[in-house]
Length: 145
Image 1 (cartoon, one colour):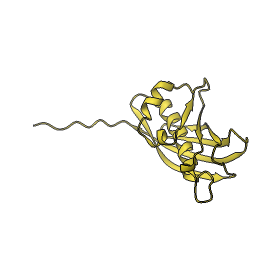
Image 2: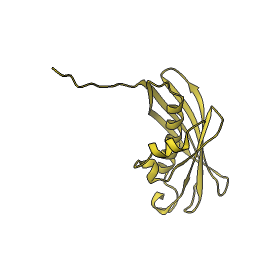
Image 3: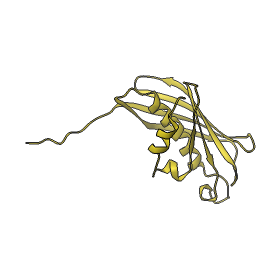
Image 4: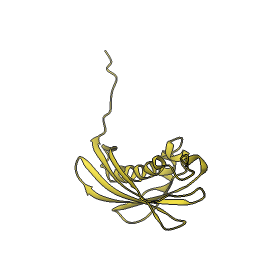
């Protein structure tokens, strides 16, 4: 998906996405978006493998950025539902890649399939479906008397 990498880097400053070191990958494909994330010790669960919550965060970040890039100027998207199937595991030192492909681009919802794959081993780590709600941006004005 065509994204301005500088704009994305600026928008994710001081967010959970920056904490997880998620990097979005630019492409000319209008229907998909990719991002990578290194697996660090801080992202593991008690058995020392990538925590499912970190994997889901990566997938939701890709689907959210993709949906917001597709929205009209007066719209925003918010995560509504996520379903994840964890297939394999990733170890500290690996890099995982989320590949999101939009399945439905409706007026009020977007549905994405996101596969998270280890760049290191090529294994499918998780497959995740994300549904985003598309809403009109609301601007609130303080009433003055």
